[in-house]
Image (cartoon, rainbow, N blue to C red; front, top):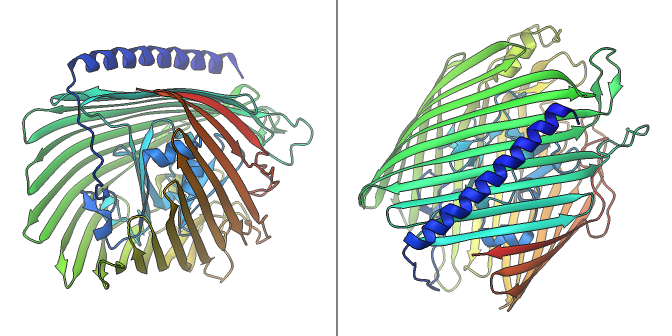
Length: 630
């Protein structure tokens, strides 16, 4: 690691320490000023935001949504977002190495750049990445409080190209004070320190989350036989929120997100000789913020927000910087929602500007979107009708739509409901794709024809059965993308359009059973047939994937035994990848009031497998930790 990187990491560590001290001071002041909040054990209906951008009971939505609560995230204990997503129905994650290595999340077989990921309302996508992909490998689990995953045909209200949406929230402000300090150490030189605190009163609330993670890692590439070096990773994250209640109707707020990640990897090129090297480094920085103002009464909500994100990446070959990019994204949004009798209207406007700088040249694009959704009671359930109109600088105007419904079909003794949805969308070629094909490294056939937009459509039909403790959900889905854009892996000529339809169809099964007061089983399985226009299997989409987690709690003890399965996946050449079952185990013990000891094993049976061809995965890993909760 070069001196510049060392200095940068030292500055980040100092900033983390300073913010940690500020968080402690804020919490101390908040504890003096805050009112106490009465606890209640009454069950509450689960409310989600991700389906329609406004609060909606999960039981009333006709779209497929799964959630992870703060208790789920804490019990499973994973260090980053990738494994949390990998055990969700309809979701698969592949990663080329360990912590910090590039990860791709696919919802129902579609590429990660078609998935919108929001952190406290901030779109974390990187416009300087090839297809504006979200960098999920840079998101630690330490500040996360809740995850909502929309798997419906289209995330229409978030953008016509949002084939799935993952909405993440961090520790939220509330009356009184709450917080947590955690420390963990483990295999491969792993160390993590994290702190979270939130508090306030009826007028002002705030939260700060900080985390510092580092690991020596392991040799990520299986073809690195000469050096066989460890490929380490470090991450320093700061995330903060603030909310001010001006009067019974007005609130204003803001959030900031600051990440510095440093990742060692293999297979780059010497800046002078162009020889292949395995001493490579990726320096990643993201600075993002969002501010908003909301007016609300019993029947009306209106919110105006402005978000800004900048991502800088520098690649080093043997300590020499060889490639720099900057991705910029700014979005001005307004959303309004009104409840009128048994109907609800939601409308909104998004003004999005994306840009990236590569080698001193800046490329920019604007997109204006207008959307609306009408939801009302129908028969014994409800129906939602949504439409979106986009005006893109480069690709003109497009209109997309979505229809969904939920219809109960059984009594309260054994609740049962049918849900269905159908929708369309489009994705314009990214500025990166266009710029690459116009650049010096592109050639025929990528340079023979200008890229045009992709069009998509999909539907789902499902059945829900059961109550809050014991339930089953089965969903049949079918979706297609016409004229999908992919990189030419045969001739490396650039980005090419695939004429015809890339399809993904399958079945999702989800279940939860309260076996005993202290024992719960959560399981899911997805069968997915994903093919390109020629009828060949699409790479790294397992035909069968799933997970099962047996979770136990008794007095001061909590434990989770979680298994992940992947079968019948192929690489880019159509060759079969490893089938695998990986078992993870976590154990927690409340030692004293507020202090919890943790023990975790990942890949407990030391399974040898690959998710991406020529990239290793870790063997058995162990972690020991302590957590103090306010």
